[in-house]
Image (cartoon, rainbow, N blue to C red; front, side):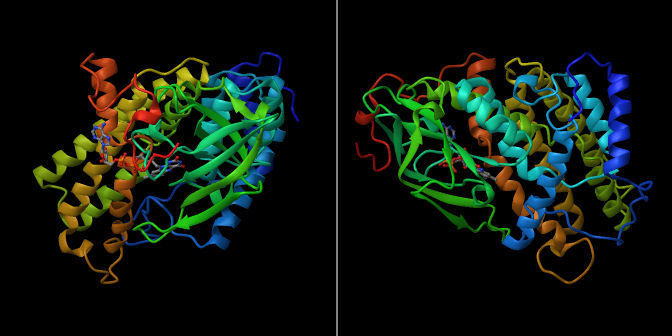
Length: 423
Ligand SMILES: Cc1cc2nc3c(=O)[nH]c(=O)nc-3n(C[C@H](O)[C@H](O)[C@H](O)COP(=O)(O)OP(=O)(O)OC[C@H]3O[C@@H](n4cnc5c(N)ncnc54)[C@H](O)[C@@H]3O)c2cc1C
């Protein structure tokens, strides 16, 4: 591994990055201008892959991430103590910008493990757990998933009923999680459990790192309306977790979960803004159907371009705060809302231009294929906090409006009427 503990300027680091990428990746040829009707018309938000194809993508992603890590480019801003390169967000941005010039495998399968679980471990895990998990996670020897949602606890996450009970040096977890993305190829998960039903619902929760291969963990795939199965139900049947796998303090899991959720909004929000290829594709479609002089369509497209750029910059501010070790503020919720709003604008524009061509597969290039984007988009409005919940956050924490009436923050959880709650 290239040691990068001594200060290195962004320019020197960029040179090193270029030398590394020249050696390990293929430079992209000059991007050919997009031509409507040529190449793939796939614009899916959630890829529909069978398990074999998915595992191949995971294998390629792991190979690339471990090569980056071994050369000091895998965790650029991470503390050197745990295998990071100890550099700044500016170094990270410089690397990302150079890497975009090369053909490299997608690392999307690590979005949850590295974007959400790893930062939470860094912020809240015991020293032993940090030493055990951070390096393998960032080297992608292991993959992480997020086990928060339950059938009776999604937006109202503090209503989780999966319980964890202390037994000597271990905790024993029993319950059901749902919508767990990527559980099928994950090795560890961050799980939130109820540890004291006698406390108000936000107070009796604790987060743990759980081994997804442990005895008593059962993972069942869920099929979504786009056809793929990237989510799962995960059942815990008396799964044993060592006491030092706790995140934060006992009954303090709400704060830990918020760290993860902030990072989730950041990683979803960070997907906004860089929509140039989508924009170019939309423009191609509009020209193909002779609508590029239509004032209404031109107005829609210009609006989309401006709001996408603004969303990207807002998310960038939040991401920079995270990389600098600060807690991002409302920009994460705003960035997420802006992303899904822009997604809706794209869908409206596509529907306006294509009309009935979207409804049945006639075999015509670049028509029915948009369906995969339109059917995937509602998922993005829900994932990482639904639109309504984001609006609640902004109205309460930014605008100072009164709290959501649904939240009872005083009564013991066991006295609340939540789903089919059993003690
Ligand atoms: C693509 C995707 C990936 C996901 N991945 C994961 C994952 O990896 N791990 C994980 O734990 N979870 C995951 N989830 C689950 C996600 O976090 C939940 O779906 C989300 O929190 C909403 O919860 P719910 O589905 O139970 O809906 P509910 O909370 O039941 O909401 C139903 C509707 O009621 C509205 N609503 C609820 N409360 C309020 C309120 N107080 N005010 C106004 N309106 C309200 C909501 O906006 C929504 O429209 C994923 C979801 C999606 C779509």
